[in-house]
Length: 279
Image 1 (tube, rainbow, N blue to C red):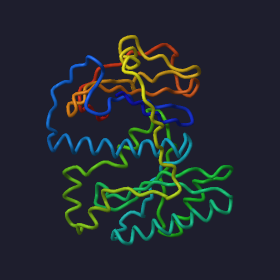
Image 2 (image 1 turned 30 degrees about the vertical axis):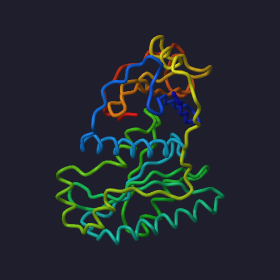
Image 3 (image 1 turned 60 degrees about the vertical axis):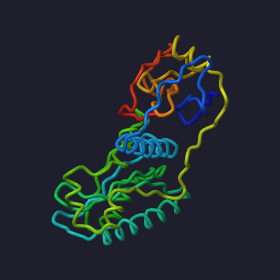
Image 4 (image 1 turned 30 degrees about the horizontal axis):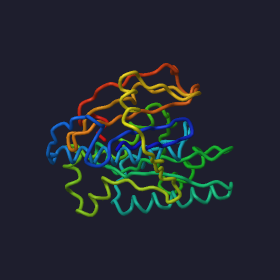
């Protein structure tokens, strides 16, 4: 049985086709199933986490919203507990500023260790419509810590994939050494992200589809719906080695949001697991 999962956003629609249950398409010979290695399981779990965060960003934030780094004055050394307290005060005071203007404060943040061992925080936050959000945030953070904030605007190309990957990244070898001086509980906090409770958590609309639909798209290319184009970099299909069945994924973007063409796009075969993960 073939099932289509559809995620609809402001300017794009994501589609996933995959077979459910024990069997694939009529006449399709199931590929040989493989037992997942610990490394494959780890990569798949990481990809699932990245995809969840990417969809959360896409469902709650827009181009022009902010990606900020909350930094302390040079030479400042604080414990993780102290940094957490500073960030909480910052969030509480920002929420009050948004509330004054009748707007919700949405955020996703992660606290991490810098190259020189100092702790800082990264945060995605929505802008306050009609106000200088960056100046308000800088004033609050400076008052709390005397530190500065680095800013950049969110850019939606790629569906925020790179940003989600950064927020959920696991420590490298050098960072593992830095983390070794912290307690087990603190290490867990330094590899996790947190977010405001008012975020939309995108869920797919699920519907049954015929296997011929997916076969036709693989053979002839995917034709976008009117007013949209298919992002070529989002289109791929392959074989899930753990159930031996075919899957297909692609994203439609609204014409005018990014450069694109309404011509059909033929899927590319990608081996499992690739850098984007599997199905």
